[in-house]
Image (cartoon, rainbow, N blue to C red; front, side, top):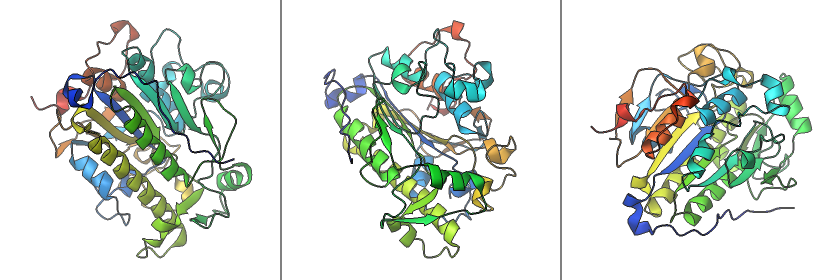
Length: 370
């Protein structure tokens, strides 16, 4: 069954678009998966992958050059971002993901904090923090969640995609054999998305923005791209004729598709009159994966996803808020994923409870025009 969800939250018309400057700030976090530091031209001018929208986003606010994820793998990094704390304070590895709750009932997650202040909250894409025992997104502060239920970007034989299978890699063989092309809405049964997965998430993110243009919202857009299995939209693959290696070209097409999606989401923010009243944060859960067989994903750093070398935890990281953050800034001191929690709270004017003992700090004092 194909289903394109028209994500719309309760029509609480709190303010009009013309009052955007007086209403609470919107928060948009875009989270890539396994995106290498060296993939983006704004960090690596030698990258073969055209990323014009991410380059523009990086130049439109503050670009962090020494930014780190909490871990070289995805689940702990997502936990740290959503809680503002090091993952090892509570996270229990495989048990935390699939068994007992990784979240503390006495602490507010980022969506819970914003929801308590009247925000509409939506999660789209990869969650990977569990779906049972109180760990599902709708149990952690999200009004709506449209999740990746499995791991294919499209059906394997879809004529609109180009595949690259990595026969030497056991992870890749598992993904192709065991994963399906599927999504799930608020814990529903799996269904087939309407289109290539990166574009589908982008389409639904645009709907969230349009349908909540008159109330504050928090949107967590957690793309699967460019995580394996390697499946590029054919339009992106066809646009990269300068890349001769097939696997590299498919991977680059996936990053190009991610970049296209970021551009569409930013355009939706602007077209709905929300640009000056929305903070946009972009990053990746960890570094690029060595098992895809492409050498320069994390250039200039050594190491890959799963490791704690810089290549595994040194990630792209940008913040844009035209009303408060001057364009063209670069910040070279260390920053972390868990700083997103405190930064969003500070930008939204929310006072944090000191008893929660966050590890992160707000980055707004460094980014604001003061």
